[in-house]
Image (tube, rainbow, N blue to C red; front, top):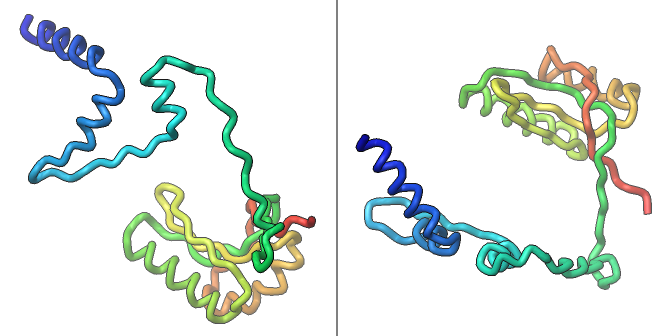
Length: 163
């Protein structure tokens, strides 16, 4: 009976508190505890506080390419190939191995990008953004000096968009 009464009391107090009070309670500085900072779009705050769901259109983005001295490079994701240099487990040492191999590749071939990612439960290091398998194969022999098990894999890559 006490559990049901406590749950009902907790539910009533939670629903009577509006979102702003909840956020203020989260952000309150309490000795001996960490702090939480809640960042939200002002439109969301307005919607919560007023119940108005008509969101205004966001401001238009600024076109930096028209600004003298600023060069904007647009990259888009496409299907292509990368060279997988390392595939390990979830330990910190495996993360460090993946980062080290990526750094060695960048030192060996300065123009090549290194991507160290974690896909549970594995750390991996992939390099390059190659549109064709043949383009990736040109680097594979050279990169196998760093990682003998390196192989070409299909992947989503970043490529420079044509204007």
